[in-house]
Amino acid sequence: MARAQALRRIALARWQQASLRNCLLALCPALILSGCIPQAAGDYGRPTTTAPTPAPRLESDPSVGTVADTRPLWEARPVSRNAVSVSGGSYIVQPGDTLRGIGNKTGAGSEALAAINGLEPPFTIYAGQRLTIPSGLFHNVSSGETGIAIARAYNVRWADIVVLNDLEEPFILRIGQRLKLPDGAMMQPASPPENISLEQRAAAFSLDIDDIVTGGQPAAREGVAVSAGNAAPARASTAAIVAPSGFDGRFQWPASGAVLSRFGNKGGGKVNDGIELAMQQDARFSAAAGGVVAYTGDDVPTLGNLILIDHGSGWVTAYGNASRILVKRGQQVKAGDVLGLAGDTGLATRPQLHFELRRDRKPVDPLTRLPER
Image 1 (spheres, rainbow, N blue to C red):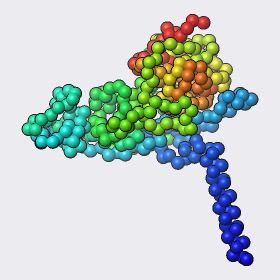
Image 2 (image 1 turned 60 degrees about the horizontal axis):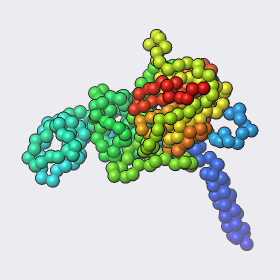
Image 3 (image 1 turned 90 degrees about the vertical axis):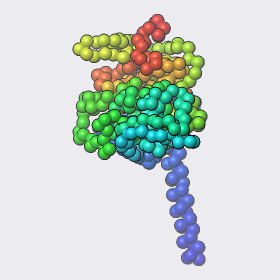
Image 4 (image 1 turned 90 degrees about the horizontal axis):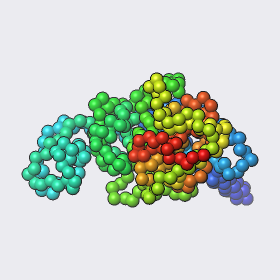
C-alpha cells in the first residue's frame, strides 16, 4: 500500500511539472527563446541589459497585441571564427577540378579566385590552366550566419567585406562560401566597453540601414528555395527571406502627425535620410505599403527601436524611434497594418516617428512619394 501511494505521489508531481512546462511554453515563447539562444560572439559594445519596455497607453484596446522579439537575427546565430590565412601563389587546374573545389582546396574563395583571374560566368576552367591564388584571410560561412555577424566577429566593417568580395544583390551568403576579410581583421573578440552611453555607442558603430539591408540575411544552402515570409508567424524568422515582387511604388502615410523635420541636409554635417512625424507617446503607426518585415531591432543607436519593411522592386521603408515593435522578422504585412507604437527611443528628444524611403538602398525624400494631405 505504501509503495502504491508513493508511486501515485511521484506520478502526480511529474504531471504537475509537465503542466507547468506546457503552460510556460504556451504563454512565453519569446521569453524562452531569448533565454535559450546564445548571443553572437564578437557582438562588442552592446548593452548587457535592456531597459524595460514601457507599457502602452492603449490597455483597453486588445488590437495592440504583444511586443515581438526584437533581437536582431545576427545576435541569435553565433559566428565561428574559422578564418584561415592563405599565402597565395598559383595552382595548375587538374582534370575534374571546379572553381569551387579549388577554392575549398586552397582555402581561398571561389569568388576571389574568379575575380583575381578575370573569370566571368559561367566560370569555365580547363585542365592545365594556371590560376593565381589570392592571399589573405578567408572566413568559411556556416549555416545561418549573417554578413553583419561575421563583420562584428572579426571587428571589421561589413561594407568593406562587400566591396572586397564584390558582393551583389540580393546579398544572401551561401553556406560554405569563403569571404575574404579586410586587413586588420581580429581573430579574437573585442572586449565590450563598460558603461557605454548611447552617444558613445552611436559613435563606436558604423552600422546603418544600408548595412542591415545588405548584411542582415542569414546564409542559405545553395539550391534551396528562399522563404517568402508568413502572414502571421509564431516567432521571428531565422531563415533568408525573398523580397516581394511586382511592387508599384505607391505609399501611404504611416501616421497622421505633422512633419517635424524634413529630408536632406540640416547643416553642420548633419543629413536627415527621412522625415520625423510628431506623435503621441505609444500612438500606433502603420505600414506605408505591403511587404515583408526584413528587420526589427535597435542596432542603429540614433533610431532606437527600428523596423524595416522590404516591399520589393528595390523599395524599403524604415520606421524608427518606436517605443514598442509589434511585428516579427519574416511577417507579411499589408498597407495600413499596425507595426508598432511611437516613442522617443534612440536619440529622439520627444515622441515621434522617424520614417524613411529607400530605393535600391539610396534614401528618397518621402514627401515626393507620399500623397498630398
